[in-house]
Image: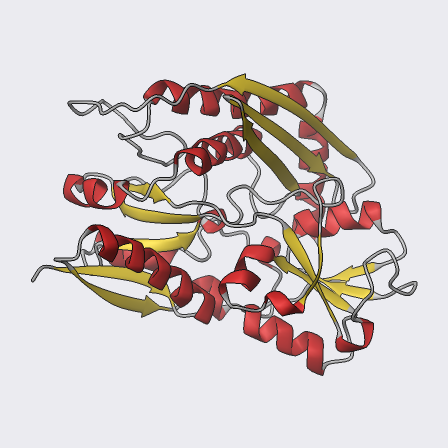
Length: 344
């Protein structure tokens, strides 16, 4: 029986996510056996520094890619938002699975259960490891203070419950759902309060770019709507040259053949911001392309079973929106945010 080796981070959430992808693959390929190889990444080891300060694009992916490169694993499962918009040469995202809830959730300290961010007492401290969340929420809720909190989901929840430091913490709703901790969610943040990170809520399967066999194997997992939304989001971020160290956020929706993309940039304290919405017509007709193309990758993603025209339209939408914001002065906001972040 052929064995497919699947790389993953060691955290409980990463394991749950990987198990869900393996379960989908098993349903398609009952004759294959899957072996899970778990490893620690730089981001898992450096826990005393805010992510945005470490300044490394591939914090949670580098060690996994190293194993992929050395042929120790055949594919790797990631949270798509951890994957940089430009992958190292030789790698590609061979599948993007159907997205779960992409929004951010607020988990409150037991003594504040029943509250919302709006009704928390003045100067309450809210924990988040994300500049994107802190910038948007500071702007929306000036009575609150935002402080970095690191560690995996289990660690962050423990810090919230056991230390008297935080009144609430902000986490991705999808992660809480996958862990079965929906009961802890006190509030889901709407786009007008806090737009989400590029790729949030979706899982990406990374493979070696030239491994046609694996590309065919995992390609069945592509969810067309999630794929097109995430291509637009990643193209927007890539064109802005945003990463962990600047507050960039998005919101996408597909409706009646139209893909809507809202994107925004913020200063670190949220006082300065800029956002715009654009839409594009996307036609998704079934299509199987014969013969390899020169470079089938778009923003690091290979999807031969989804119409190329639709993918290009999604990528173009992301680039157009980023260009619009850059023309209106977004570069200045991002440059200042980057310099301030580096200086702190």
